[in-house]
Length: 75
Image (cartoon, rainbow, N blue to C red; front, side):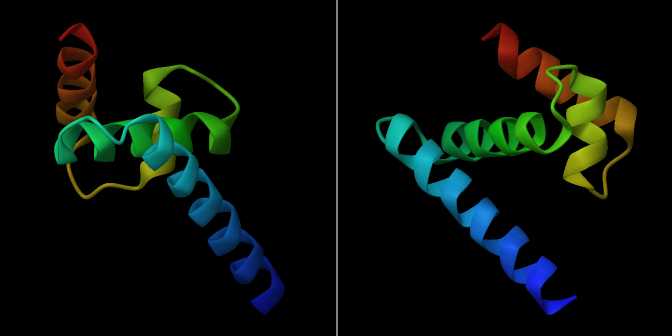
């Protein structure tokens, strides 16, 4: 089990390093959004917002998080 946790941690760290490189001139909330979306898409293998939201395991309700992500994408 430790190997799985280490592998997951390493993968998430690599994703965060990559997203920080491509979004270094954005504001902090936009960088976090980029990191969350990239992680969710890579973890699920899907670009559907509902799948990404499920993968993020946020405490907020799914409908509210979908609305937030949708409106951020429109900006």
